[in-house]
View 1 (tube, rainbow, N blue to C red):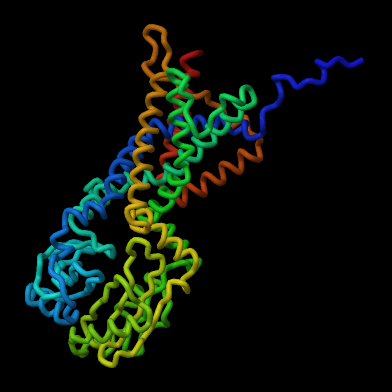
View 2: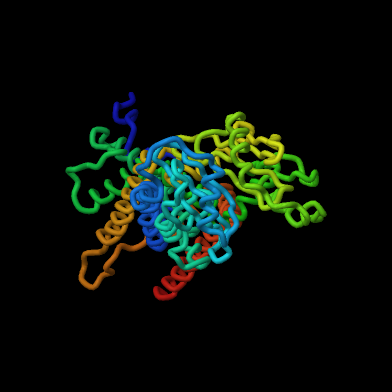
Length: 480
């Protein structure tokens, strides 16, 4: 007869199939945590500061952005003329009319003495058309100096293109480290739950634990909470990078996922509306026509009619109106990426005849272009205003805590004998050979493909493998 013991499951039951990947992911997570975490730590601190930059900007530059005067706003054209009198040495490029009582109008000028994407701005009291101050603004977001400085700190550490390598390296590895860490944490949770379901924790820390177990609990539970945010920041951060960002741009162009732009040409030589920004850029300088060389300057007083046409076509709210330098180009009015604005339409208008030349509706954009726009706005802390800024700041704070806990675990895992290493040893090597051959080949192919698309990830991973291989050979030689 069979005994009850023969039918009970034993402790030697095979582990789930995913456990075969655990040693490999653990070793990769360890090396990335040791060597890449410092770059991620800097990105987290600077990113947290940049996340709240819009709020800091509104406080620090309140005197430029707001006015205490009340009353009906004067025509925008009068406000532009007033700004031109302040900066008669420059060419007016665009205007952002005040949208709420107490806000100032921002008139922007092209200034050759400024850096790339920078413009000079004069801030106007809309009720009196009196200038209230001047500043430099940057990019499509119109960042003021403090926010611009924090942005450059986060992107380049103010080291130029060389500094961009740090942020690209951090963005390249952040998602990999986050997903690998959550995999390891979930695997540990499953094993704990099979032994003691009452004490297994996935999103909380076991307060009864001590030493390395408690540090591991803090590290793992924190990662489980913010892993989605980390992967999102990694993916969107790469779009700004030099190398991976270029590949992403090429992919978007090949799949027609680029952001459409309005057609502003009034001579009949432009391409069809709906071309991407990059495609429009490719047309500049092609076959300059006589009309382009002899076109008269634009009368900025046409802006009032242009804005009225834009409002009639539902391009309303906070907008930026671009003012052409010659009469053969249309005015453009585009809705700004402000908090809680999810649709950014744009329109091109012939200033002389007030004829609509082209309209681009956000709802007609490719889905990928829409997602990219939302993702960028969210990454910058703009999409949901203060809510998204505080959320990004919280993610940055938790990420910093996780990195510190990770290094603490490395220290706590050190051998206790006298003269031993002051830190813990790496996980056991040889994990690649423990997974099925077909899976190993697929992993290598996928790694090469990802490494080509995200070059800094591929090069740094190759460096890890090389160092690990050399270290292994030296260790074996020492034992012989």
